Length: 125
Image (cartoon, rainbow, N blue to C red):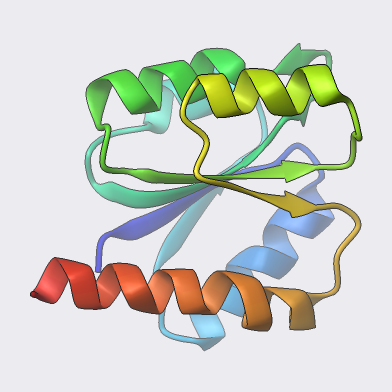
């Protein structure tokens, strides 16, 4: 499977998700700013876990770039905001799903891992 990119400004969350994925055999990289996300993204990533709010910036420019350059890349948005406007904008730009924050890592077992397994099977078919 291709690597997973985590773009999350809260370093503790990014580190916890990275460790979670690593312990389950999924290679990942993490960055903490919109600028770093824009610079590091490439087709080497099959999945991007993307926080909607990155400090003072929204991640929409990165979401747009990902979907334009690599439309098959799965983008799951982290969101601590209930803003209908943000969610609508993310859907319009091609977000594939949402992970509400705060979340427990057990939630990732139930939500994220099945999606990753599906992608792995799809890529191997």
